Image (cartoon, rainbow over all chains, first blue to last red; front, side, top):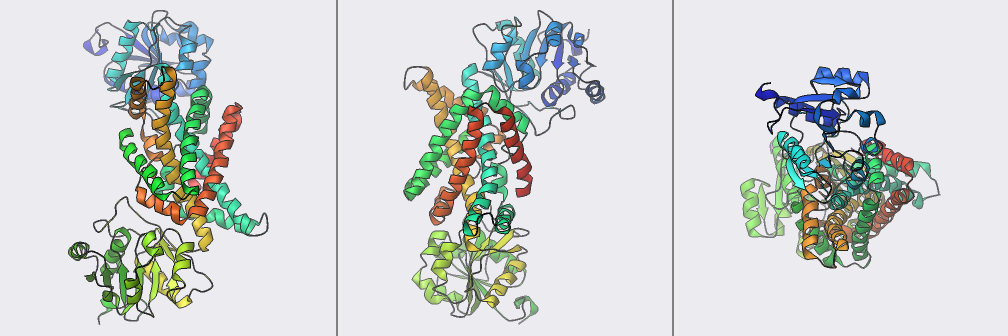
Length: 305
Length: 305
């Protein structure tokens, strides 16, 4: 065995990727470029064929036995599949392997997996593009991006080190935090913006029609159509940016809301308080206070970039 | 007089720009490149000096008499100055000149100016950058962007044609609409996104602190600080995009809200209905309906781009 196929911690090992979409495929490309021995398990033969052509893994199969001998397995699956794991997959996971995932919500993933496999580490590599599927994987997706892990008192420290080696291999920034704190944070900065943007798209469309029909006889189709055309003609880059994630993948948005429901509802409540406050300033014509509230936002934003 | 200094409609004429910030300065650069005779009136001598150095107008003065002889005057001023015009400026406007503005709200501008000057045309060239001031003007700012005009029954048709010539000279897209319809549309697609984004910034900051302090003793500063650091560490391009206009110029945001208060409040009410609906789907765990609502947003968004 050459140095190229050695695991960075010096032990011989192979890594298994369950799913070769955006995250799994990108991991495969980076790890193979580093000389890791990568095995991929996917559901469909057509996906396996394309994954082989793209070189996302050294071996790709629709049979989970391809994972035999893996020292580390990454569950690069959507949240719904993570939370209702395929029994055939469970049966095929090597009993001593470190298992990690890439789900964007951590508490429910831990509840599901900590009882099933002994060496589970919950991960959330925070990187992405608008693409999905076997064509989506790209090199260097994780470079400089946070690789969040949410260990619990039950997490095996040696398993944590194996996942740290994975994050370092793809040049991500290692970030440890509490699972609940993670889920709250992503509700605010990742899941809430989806709902905020989606509501803005709906309001722009419906608000234009409703206001226009208020001008004339109820249900004046022509006036409504004109108003809807006008908002579309006048919308510019500010509207486009504010609604980008709100107009994104609806499956993903609904799944994140479902798996992080409680935290997303808390984030919405917090958002509503902020919006109420701004609206109150408008209603009461407190223009200096409104300017100060907007200035506070202007000062805050660079801290998040 | 050479062809270079002729007005495009064949009559000799000079254009006056009141204000040489982003909009006035950009107009000056484009119109001078087309050979127009451009005069600029600004308040401060330091601005006049810099405007001369940048060539934003052929003559720049802090004396409004520089506007004498102008056939067309563009009031490239902030909304507050448009709505409370300087008496010295009013006295200096040539009585027969066509006067137009560039304000982002049209009904109050019309209420102010239609009673003051006989040949007023309300304009809203919808172009911008994040910059402001005498350094902000750039060439081709208006190319392909909407130049909205909101004529009323009192608008002089010949004056409208003069403004159309201006919009064509800077290669903007001429767009006529009703002033109220304009103000409603910009409330939804331009002013509402500012409030939506500002509320999101506040919610991300306050929501993190509030949720964290709920975990431990009230006012646990360390836990709060950790939670606030975490949302900052995890925020990515989606959060940055959604908050871009919300974290923009607070003066401008507050001014637009003040000058378009009624329409912005109506837009907020429409937005709140959309948000309530999405929140209801989460509360009732209607995941298929949430997915469909997000899918509707995904279908809508390209219509606005």
